[in-house]
Length: 490
Image (tube, rainbow, N blue to C red):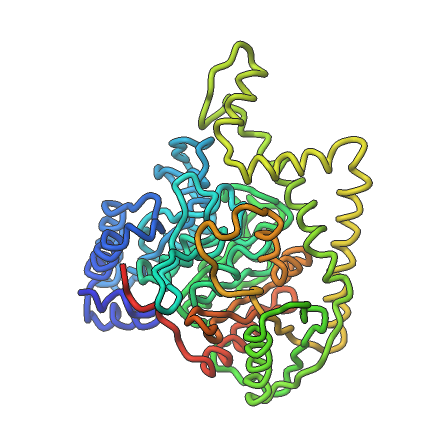
């Protein structure tokens, strides 16, 4: 049964249609894999009973010819998505054993299309982190290891559980969220494919909020086609989310294999950073050559405000986090620590419930929103954000179809290696935050390996609501680079 876990969603869909195996057999194979890989700590709550129930339901529908586009496909769900009657904690002590009486829009659409819930996946607390080390359930381990070393590596963050589970074949795909790179960076660290859709393409309703003007849900999958299949089910207008955009969802899978001849691909000079590892530079050049060989035209572009993106992001995101996390006060739900009066109860609950990184960001956010500093910090950061967005608009106005950049400044690092200096950790988002600041779509595709045998990824940034072009270009890179699977050690 174990070979059932190594299929792609497209292959599993075909196998289920041909009755080569049942959805229940497919689910059981994944549940066994999850049990055998507990040391990766990718799942914070496996849901075997629910999974078997949903798989049987999928089998019954497939037998009647009524199966949806994801009928019987076992998925993992990031613990930021509310799942009805199943604990949802955002991997924070402050949410305790919160069991939502409602389902997030994105997950409800996956269940509508017949997918099977394997369980809830680990993430950085409230999605704040680039390594999945801030979770109250402990860090996630990357299934990849450096050649000849047993050092535990991070899978990236905040969607580290999602990326690790997909890479280790513990689910066929996973939901994830991206506020500053939290889909694309873990995908690059684990040789999986992750796409952050255009802001407003997927509903945010029922997803625990971090920074509401930046957060966006998207899939992490084994390859570009699987990401396209998942994205079609996840995307769509939702009247419950006022930032959700009412435009038709295309058949993303149809974009795979389309010609990219004549497309103009921008290479931004500002992404050539001082001290960038030679292997990242080499990979970037290789990726550009692969696209050129497929008929695309390479053009140098300028995004002059890129250097301000990271500092502006680390003002805007904590400010919104400070506002969003004010609701966790020990009164309405989640953790409550006693105090002599209501103020002390608030203080005790928040001090005990939030981890270090969340407290740090809430304090930064509260500071930049305070009366004396609002104009100096928050307002200026929002102006910089407008300029970053305009840089991209100017590029696209000149006929550029997509922009090619590295996904991360390095391969995965060791657990505990970068925890001492928060700024060093924040620099991991250097290539990804601009995309969130501008509300654009971005995809990370595995593209090569570093000298130590660890995966590296390239990022493609697209025009608003033009994810199809990213899937077409991503498939070209994937075909040229090949597939990467971690040697099994767990």
